[in-house]
Amino acid sequence: MKPKGDQPRNSGGQYGETIGGTGAIRKLQHDQPLTGLAAQAEIEVESLLDAGGIPEILKRNAIRVQAVADLFYGALITAAQEGNIDKVAQYAQRYGWLSGCALRAWQALGVETKGNSAATVLDVMRSLAKEGENG
Image (cartoon, rainbow, N blue to C red):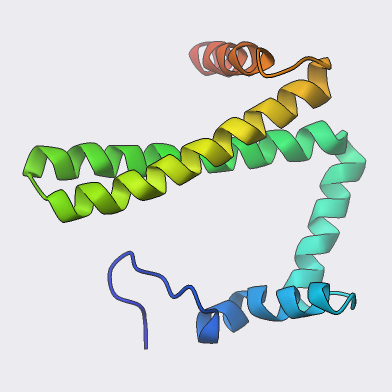
C-alpha cells in the first residue's frame, strides 16, 4: 500500500526497508557494518569524499536541502494563493524545518571552506547565484 499524496510513512515499514533506511539505522545503532543499498550509498559517499573532500559533501548536502526547501516554499505560496490553509500550515512547517537545515548546511560549508563563521553563508549563497547567472 502506497502512502497517500505527499504523506510518506515516517515509521519505516516497507518503504524504509525498500530504500534500506530502516535496516541501516539498526546497523548504526548496533555498530554493525552497513549492508545492501546502504552499503552501496556508503561507497558512493567514500568516493565523493576521496574526490572532493568534506567541502564537496557539505556542498552537495546544502544544495540538496536548499532545493527541497525551495520546492516546499513554492508549494506554500501556491496553497496560500488558493486559500488552502491546511496545506499552508503543512508546507510552512516543512519549509521552516528544511530552511533551518539548509542554513546549517551552508554555515558548515562556509566554515569548512573559508574558516569563517555564519557570515560566510552570504558569501557562499552569492557565489552560487553568480554561478547560476554565468552557467
